[in-house]
Length: 121
Image 1 (cartoon, rainbow, N blue to C red):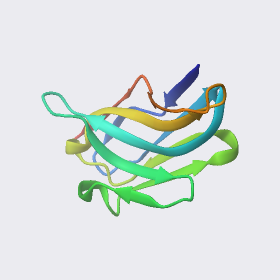
Image 2 (cartoon, one colour; image 1 turned 60 degrees about the horizontal axis):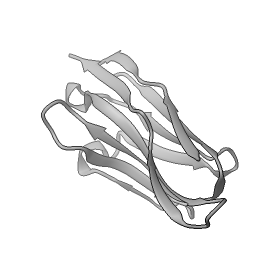
Image 3 (cartoon, helix red, strand yellow; image 1 turned 180 degrees about the vertical axis):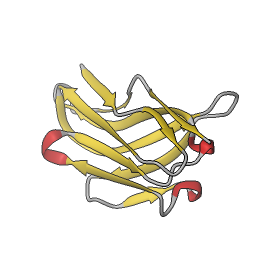
């Protein structure tokens, strides 16, 4: 079994910064891709940023230039550095990973439990 454990959410004023972390553990052969999604009240979950094993990244237009995604392959951990936060960034942020099981060698999608980010104006 694989688990994703997130940390780093909280309350911050507009213009501030937060850093989210997500660590994967369990029976992992390799991690293909990791990313962060968010879901605000009454809205659909949306991709914020993603990173593949080779290091290529992609971002939602709304966060380009403000957020940076990175990963530590040795620690099976992905980070999201969020700068210049805006009230509209307020949401529950979910970590996602596309992981090849160390038992079955099949790929599965996993989600973290979510961490609340609240940006006050």
